[in-house]
Image (cartoon, rainbow, N blue to C red; front, side):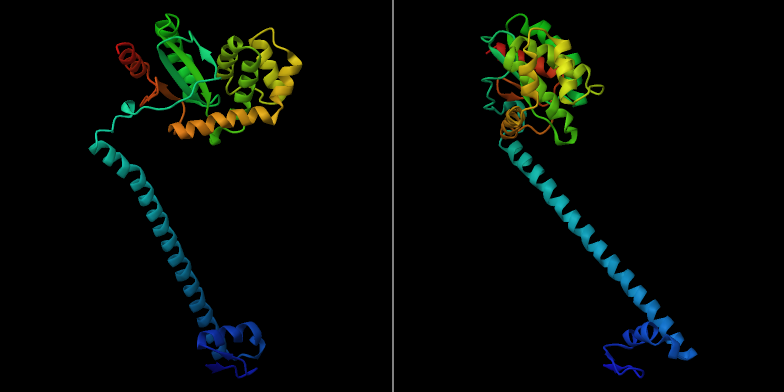
Length: 272
């Protein structure tokens, strides 16, 4: 311990004592003591910088550890699955439920294509514009397959994704056939749409006819409808959805949404 000559306060080190001199007794110091104060302050600043650097290094190491553990959590199950012959995602069955969901095509079609989608997702818009029409032309119109849509609004696309899903859900509650007109309109106007209640009502009314306007407005503003959308999303997590669009063909999870991939899976199901 060292004692201050000016006030008698005790300190653990000379550095602490000399910093105290500069803070409390600056007017009483001689030039030699002032030099000691300057040296002590520099020493304190070096110590603070080293402490911050150590903390940053520890934080970086901690993040690196978390990253490695996260990668291991994903990769190790894949390696184990590969070793057991389960590396092909199309070989894993899913219990995707389709009851009470919008259906495009013949209910009795032998192949069910399920799309988990997000109305604000650019890739989903690509599926709607480029892939869906080919599925309709080659499989749905002929009665070989039907398309079922389930909501999976991504957090990164909120609130627009859920708002759009609510508008589609409210359309479906009144007219299932009208649903698919609104489905197309939501994707086609994805980035230009007014996602307020009135904006969504206007889009639905422009996309289809015969709906009860008052009922539509009440439905879109209801938190109950949003709960139904989130129920679809919870099912999606249970089904292994990790992005959108995620496609299932008769319960088999497609590795991507390219037409060639989906066509191959559909043909495999039709040949059984």
